Length: 115
Length: 115
Image (cartoon, rainbow over the protein chains, first blue to last red):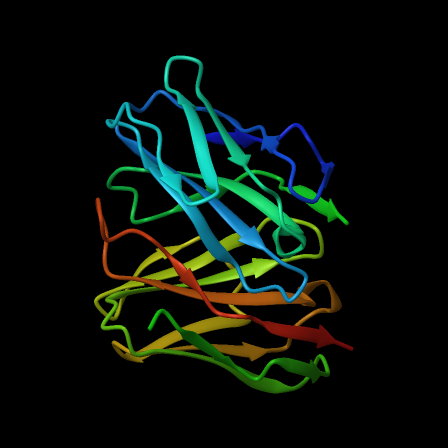
């Protein structure tokens, strides 16, 4: 079975600074997908970024980028120019190819952006 | 439009009540999901419907009964719940399964309290 580990329960960052959230996963699969989801206090889960394991190039979405290290089974999220609206719980998630779209979530990291 | 609408937003019910949660999407998605989320924990998958057929049931107790009347609508019928079933219930949908179609879009959830 796959497992996803987020080793940082809580983090803080000053507005406009850069922060990196860690995620590692354990799998014997070669074909899979990785996701970062954000859940603000308003509770709606929003997709931040998605990575396909067969792609070596790291995914980026505006201020959000990932460092995907397949051999190390690591998938960290970097948030540049942090904004107050980035305050949320961030979940890293794994999906095996042809798994019926089953997402396996990590425990989450609470990120607080301070002014 | 990436909206998944869940009603009601809040629900309080007794252990002998019967109630239903509703989820609707008009994005033409053919896969829909129910998750249960306890406070400060990641979502736990309960059910997956693919093309209106139940494809995954994560050994959920029979007091939770899902229904997918059509491709846009997903219901979760609740009966004889226990206080430990109190949680945020999230609905999600995706285009389908496999690469490019497996991004899940979440609703805002129904906060359920069982007294």
